[in-house]
Length: 348
Figure 1 (cartoon, one colour):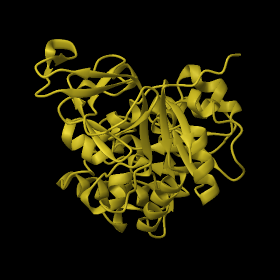
Figure 2 (cartoon, helix red, strand yellow):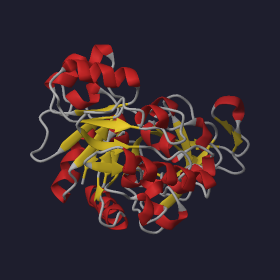
Figure 3 (cartoon, helix red, strand yellow):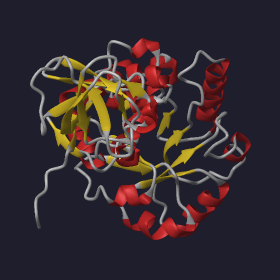
């Protein structure tokens, strides 16, 4: 097989990932701190994220689907993995064979798990205000869960990244569930929920975004480190005369003679068109503003101040998640998970 170098790479900072988890664990107080690694570890690579965090002491991991769970086998010793989307009819073979717990989300899933007949532990999600996945409170307390071996009873905060009265209402509802439904552990807080305070931690927290460099609430600002550093190789450097335009729609006109570095990067890679007007890169400490539109595979940067930049050089793309989200109007989640498979993932 021919080894071909990618013109795109994500430099991934394992030390920052672990430092973020440790800060979140400290904010979780006496609760264990797990990790959501769905969507292939939010795009970083779930297996590598699990490896780094398990070595740091994380023991509880969460994925969305059974395919994601199967891709992580065999699990590191002492690690627990749960599938948030529960068990559909087509999932039962995997659910019975893999050393993984389903998070049961409906009366139908509870019945399906009971019918498996082996009495294995499960997790259960109860809806306290999200109206997404989870049993209704009246279903959960009405006897449908009687006799199940519940490892973790979960709910999910809908508005934890906001100062919303819904947070307190969900907290009160979950406390009542804790008193009514026996389980070994109880878990409510995601990344933003951890920042709401110790009342939300219960026995287990489940951060996702903040592990990977996102800031879920202002309380976390200054504590969460950037983990993901996209880089793109320069495909061509060209001189543009004053008055000439760059890219589709002639969206940028050179106000002077300019040196343009065209990078092997575009919206097909998850570097979206919304970056036009605010995006940029750096090369050898020089700032290179994005000029024109982002196209499918190419993006142009003004390299006029960069000196001897040339074909094959690597640009460090500006991608601090909270800063980039504020500049583009896109969510930190979209910006992170959208970075595509063309990027080579390099841990350091």
